[in-house]
Image (cartoon, rainbow, N blue to C red):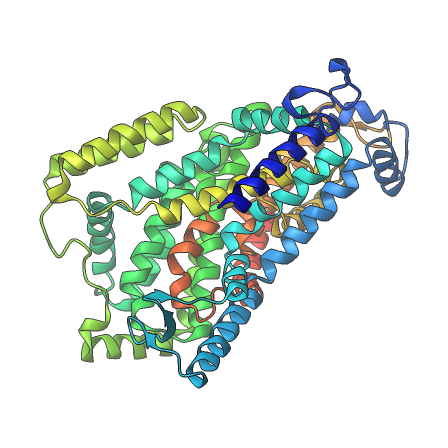
Length: 539
């Protein structure tokens, strides 16, 4: 105990000694309060309007702000880590297996639950440290949060502590509203009354197809995403994923159909929110600045998205028609395979369902006011406690993990505008659409459209990177291309669209070793192409 106390005292003294070097407590390294540095550096402060080439612009921006390159390298490492999460999970299982076998050979006592063996020492589970580290690194939702540690260390190397606090405070005001909103909307949307209401609506629709497995599957993957235009995409993703768990994934389809379904779900949800101007995050980022309202979205995006969703879903249903027939036969023989109602068939009064819907509406309306969202959620938790006999336990772990993922992604992504903005600004319509799709696969699509709104050539009339006047009509074409590309590519990866982590969190238990990024990409590729053709040919 004395050693621990001495070590703690030594660490505190060391921290007190080095803190002035890092500008802790708001002091700058030079001791000058005016030496504060803002990140990211505003685009207009690069003064590179007269630099002609894209590569030259990016080199110039790195010379002006060397931190740009470091932040982007860390972001790239985080993206690579996200794609390697499955490898870390497999490595953790292998280490665990070797750990168990080693202790079995040593004659250690074993105990466990659900058929799992693990070595026990003095009544406690003996775990392998490296296996737990690999489990930690294999959690996709934690990846971008983990890489915030080297990012903060990098900021301290370049600047001072107040630079970090000012940056995070700015994100809380402007960017963290969405992660907070996603946490609350997921928790509210997954409650028993909301699920009963949505499932009743879906049941009516599925009954037109005989309430078969295929009918439920088609109803969920078409109606659910389109519903996202009114209840927001995160809520639509949560509800659709939970219904797919009960009426599809519980029947144990083939891995190919599993990945085809989750890929189709991600793409459909990404484009399904474009019927309105307030639901899809990539649309919400630019609607106000570019003057887009609901009528505009319906005419230029909504109906094209609906056409693409229907074509993609029907095509997949036709392609997997034989397997759907097998699933239906399996369900008929073994009806217990379908997961039953979590509420056990209990009745929930209509008044309680209505109150839940009102709380859902309150969360949507106060989306950009985090304090009001959280305040409403606290009232909601109180109401759930008062009506606990009609409620299930609140599932908060999964929403919190998803919110943490999005907050980490926003923190990293907001530092990438130095290179994304000139890349987007240098492209014409078709290359811009394709480029937006590709960039979306490696960054949140809302971040792509937000950065596009900062590019001068998207403001009409304006001047592009080489000084040519851009007409208002051409600017509108560019705006449409970048947003269409961003929502089209929103299903290619987990990080491409804000609601995707919510869907993966709910469905990943049905994928051995977790959801494979490569197989998800392949599952979403065909719907992505169909949606791209829908926007390009019909627009």
